[in-house]
Image (cartoon, one colour):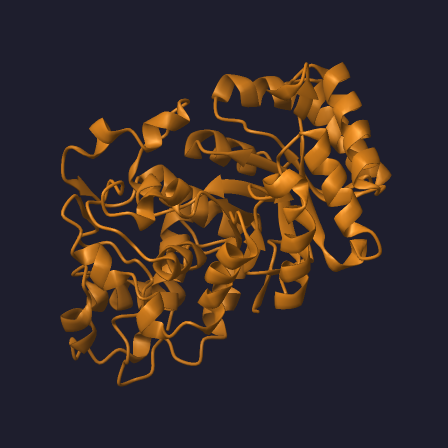
Length: 382
């Protein structure tokens, strides 16, 4: 298992994490099986958005004696009321829900406390200006939550929250179909069939800006919906018009800027192992570029996907990394010091490009690589 920095939190997390979708299986007995397998395979991060007391209690039992083995991301504002899940902004309910959560999990702290499911600007502003964010800050001051997070499907809202400086971790839906869709307060729009009727071209610029801003500000992204609820793995259901493999979906998410871990849903130990197999997959098995280039409904013409098909470079330039740092600098309108530092330590720089053009002949998306290298040399000075 490979590990990544979770933004600026100081936490090192497994690049494959665990969602909680399967915890309720088999009368919640699957919780322990999944966490046992996760620990055995080196997964140290999991998400718990579910508010069902039985699920939370099963997690608490499964964590006994090994709380320090897992980094727990759990959700403030996800409560259980009248026998069902509720997303609440009522501060009394939120406080009581947090108290109940800690009791059921048999712990006195949560590593990452997520403000749950914020998909409208109105909702974010009410949270930011009201008692919910104050409560989360209070929890952090007490050490009850170690780091503050927010979950969202809306790039406009997520970007506003990230720029506020209040959020250290963002839980966001990342996959190659969602990334084409503009911001909406209705999460169903991300998967609505009507939105894929036309030929779609290139990533939504707000999503690009969100990922790059998170990278620049040191906000770690934990990924949900990497398989689009499984639809991306099924040719009949995939809005791209073609199925992807689990390895391709995972690799796409893990090559986006700022992504730290992908939280895979698993309804059994076998399903979890299928996702963990990514760690041993070959470059060919992970490669999504050829598949993307052949999608009948979608095109990324001219857009660098950081897939590294441009390699090998005769001057050993890491073209994908140079392009990523170039995009980060262009998005900022200046060169942030952290971006400059990362560029400086590359063993070879854009200025070494001899304009042989080999990279452009290999790029499935027809990116103007030589032009990008020239621009990077101008911006970074070498």
